Image (cartoon, rainbow, N blue to C red):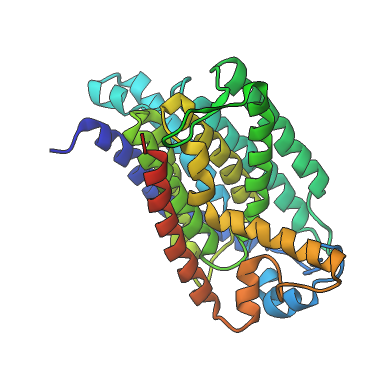
Length: 354
């Protein structure tokens, strides 16, 4: 028999998916009406040099595919979360009251992080679509934003929740004390850097969808039902986005989606560690392996060019390298999806070990 707690997780997820599917045509209308895409590619490599190969590979799509599709994700999550909360107060029936998953202990901070990151990413995308090849918000300011927000949340974890350890499967917890705060900041920055995985139609949606489904399962088995419902709602919204993002993409996620999703992922991982009695932090590199390897490939490429004067990959990050050596983009996407599913399964198992 299906328990009520599972229903409490599935209904918001389904609601976010339906809302996203219904609202996407309206979003698409305005994105095309106002030509919300880059007017000039003007792409530079990680070392600041012109990205010639990238422009040859992806240049046409850069100047014809609308950006800001990530609005669909965080807007759907916010509407569903606050909508259920409002209905539960307007009509406080047992069903709606139980369905309400907006709670101070589990979902206030993740929701705030998702929306704050989404809004900052939206501002960046607004600047990014200006004519004459003008760029978005400078990277140093975006990194500063992520650092400040994650520093505040990391301090909240340490001071308010008493989080000072990292759980290790089968071993005593690793006590970090106040160093848990910089660990959270570094984790947030690394995940944010992994947001560049939004570079091929359907890629980022499939990867992020698998990640959030995994953490929804982890939170559920930890009996953090509100957090599980939140993660499932994010996953439902991502699937609605993915419906319109599969090749050929109607729009791309870009910073307004990736910034909020990556920052929130760090919050969820830490909340499913000590506070949930699991191993959410250690499992993160496994569950989010596609993001980890994306950042690692960038670091390897830059380091090799500076020390050896040679590139390791045709193009970094790694998914574009596969395109450059001849893989069709749909093959890269689908293989990343497969890897994401396997990483989610392995990571969930690791996170729930006693």
